[in-house]
Amino acid sequence: MSTTTMTASSNRTGSMTSEERKVIFASSLGTVFEWYDFYIYGTLGAYLAKYFFSAVPPNVGFIFALLTFAAGFAVRPFGALIFGRLGDLVGRKYTFLITMGLMGVGTFFIGLLPGYDTWGIAAPIVLIGLRLIQGLALGGEYGGAAIYVAEHAPKNKRGYYTSWIQTTATLGLFMALLLILGIRTWMGDAAFGDWGWRIPFLLSGILLVVSLWIRLSLAESPIFAKMKAEGATSKKPLSEAFGTWSNAKIALAALFGATAGEAVVWYGGQFYALFFLTQTLKVSAVTAWIMIVIALALGTPFFIFFGWLSDKIGRKPIILAGFLLAALTYFPLFQGITHFANPKLEAALARSPVTVIADPAQCSFQFKATGTEKFTTGCDVAKSTLVNLSVNYQNQAAPAGTAASVKVGDQTLASSSPDFAKALTTAIKSHGYPAAADPNDINYPMTVLLLWILVIYVTMVYAPIAAWLVELFPSRIRYSGLSLPYHIGNGWFGGFLPATVFAIVAATGNIYSGLWYPIIVALMSLVIGFLFLPETKDVDITK
View 1 (cartoon, rainbow, N blue to C red):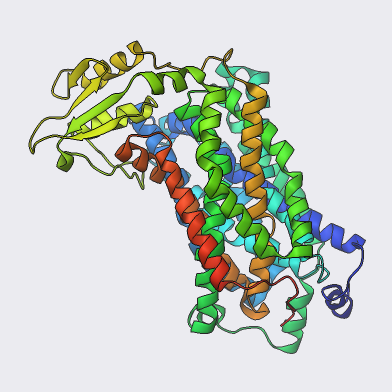
View 2: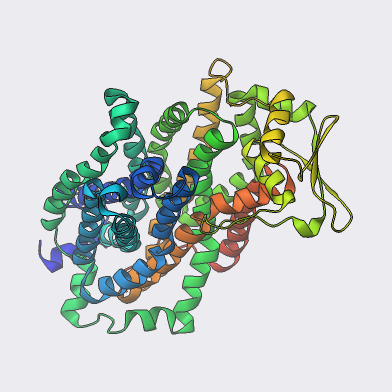
């Protein structure tokens, strides 16, 4: 396709051409596989802990495995800087070919990597290195794919075209959960735990070859090709994007007024919902996966719908409406999930009040940024034990220096007593708190319905955001300008959501209080986005 013909496509209206279908398919397919690569690590963290961190106790090994997963989130903004600059210097196509290659190779080699028993300390070191490569690559992939599609799209269909990219994170999670569940069911738990967990990683090699083959046949973005032909590309994209206030303020507004709120709604509606089901409500992992997969399958078409709708009424009203709905309804939705997924827990929370009596100075805010932090005072042990048992409790201040104690009904347990955590667990269970959700008590249709509503909020805030971000930044610095706020928002605001929620719950004593984190961030983005971000659906992105 010639540069002239390609350039015309970004300004025309009309139906989708075969070339545009190929662009969307190739960009979306590659990004699905990259998200799949990223998510299988998180889903299989327990197996990775067993094989790569076997030199430490199992609970510590699992923490290290999660820490390694978190490292991928932490480095995403750095990947955005590296590959954003490269994308503005050499082109969109070649940059996201590099990111896809790095992601696929990193995942494939995790499947081949010998464990600690074979390689010793080298095994976890190499694993961490591969996770860092994955995180860096993901920091460059999304921006490249979104920009590439948007710069090929007709001016009145950028929201619709880029919404296909927005389905990829959800489809990647869907694909990872479904494949792992299928392989585990087919092989049985014993064989899967022995070696079958490696299969999802190794399959990424096939996905990588297919994705690269398809993407190699694509031409460069028409807008970038035109800029390059005219010598109008930026020589210092990072300095131009973030070193001048006129551009930097757009990035800041995009971060705090769009991507931060989108991230917490996205992680709240998918990852935290899964975490809440398995960790708080004690629903079995397989059952929770199935319900999440069904909700995702039912909700995914709405990415396309809201992308299409954003071309009609604008990006801004749909995204801001998603922030507002999430902020207004998160509490009743999660309370409803408790009611339908674990009614015995709901009943226990109502009839068996628990009180933590402690010197406030001995109670920490248990934010586990890395997963390795230790909180060992009597108050901290009591609160973390209660949170892990999904127990609501009240806080009662005690005189300075008083040892912490917990009152359960008419029973009082002192933190100085032997096996305090074990004794507290026994007392809690004796007061009717279930050790796990009873499968016969779960109202599956209603639980899936509420999970689906959470996914709908995800589609509202996520479907139009690629087009919105592309349209906010000038073409010469678009890759750099878009990628950094997107990945700070998603990598940090979203990535730290589980740790922040746990810390808030432990501090307040209410299993729902952690929802204040996504609610406050969503409201922040609602206000900042409304005041400082413009509607962009009709802007000329060739400039």
